[in-house]
Amino acid sequence: MTQVLTTSRQTMQSSNGTGPATTPILQVQNISKRFKAHGEQRSLQQTVINLLGRNRDRAAQNAFWPLRNISFDVYPGESVGLVGHNGSGKSTLLKLITGILEPTEGQIQVNGRLSSLLELGAGFHPDLTGRENIFLNGAIYGLSRKEMHARLGSIIDFAELHDFIDTPVKHYSSGMYVRLGFAVAIHAEPDLLLVDEVLAVGDAAFQHKCLDAIQAFRRRGGTLLMVSHDLGSIQNICNRAIWLEKGHMRIDGRPIDVAMHYLNRVAEGEKQAAKGTNLPALENGLRWGSGRVLLESVQICAENGAAQSVFKTGDEMVIRIRYRCQEPVEPPVIGLSIHHQSGAHICGPNTDFGELTLPAGQTAGEVTYRIPWLSLLPGAYQVTAAVVHRQTQEMYDYHDRAYAFRVYPGASHEQYGLVTLRGEWGSRSEGVKG
Image 1 (cartoon, rainbow, N blue to C red):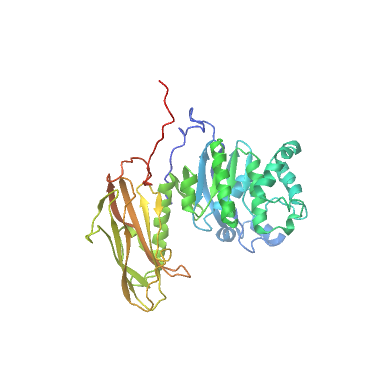
Image 2: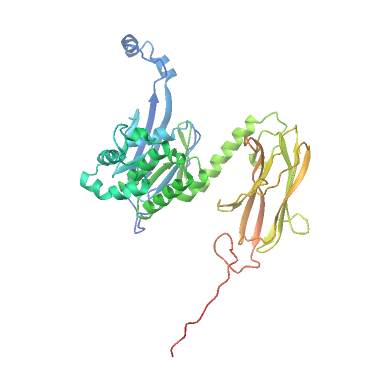
């Protein structure tokens, strides 16, 4: 059985920080969901035979369980992210919580008003206008017509659908569906908000607007349960994460810890897929890729070119990368990523962003990334190096946080945060009365 690493929630603080929240807003207890295999029990005759037990074993073998024995509590004010591969059961779990699906085993208890945005246009009637669907969804969320009238203007403003609000939603684009659905969900002022990956459909500006609205919702003490493949969003928005794998809970804990375990599993999977590509192993399983282009060495150096792992804020740093092509490929893109010891992503430069095109047809080469003035504040840092195909994003070779360095106090006297902006303070006197 897969081991589940959990964090105790019995002493979880309430959203206002005044004391422990003793009553969870969401209780998921030993939830399992079973789907029938295609073709199972197609006729009344088959149903009777199965009830008599003749095909019981065969039906059990053909059953598909997207979730098995899932248990966790969510307390008021928490923001919980669900991560995992496609098919791991994340969306199924949200549908069970909202009541769209019924669990095969176990119980779910929601103690408060629930609002959700799980599927594109879920709850919309295609022949009704946007305005009519606002009131329809409001009724689904348990709000009166008077309450929805009070929110109507804000919803239309948020969705930016003033010119189309009286148009049937069957004529809406996918982006318009998302904007209207999210606007209604967030303005329903729920106690618990469920958000699926559907936000990825919207444009960048709307995504930022949604993230701002979610953060405001959290500041008001709202509770959030969200699904996302963007681990950066999970770490930035959530104070807790749950990793689902093949229908089982793997880890329930801090987002940074869950993300690292999940990424290591992804790395192991790609490493297994890359067997036979002559890809050398890197310590701790932190390397994967197709191996068609290899990063032969990555060195963090001082300005004189000597390898170095200790720097001061304000020092010059040079990262030198040697690569070799195992077969003819188009000029690849080489990139870096720098992370703080807390897991925060500092930056991600690459040769494409830097408008450096590597020579075509070469079998080996070297690139350097020079940082003339290191703006990082004291702490421990890790460097990821990668080489990818420019168009297809095929990962040739990925070294995940495999190179470390430490920064000590130097040219900057700042002590808090991750970087210094090298700003300058100034003042101007307006006159002082004795």
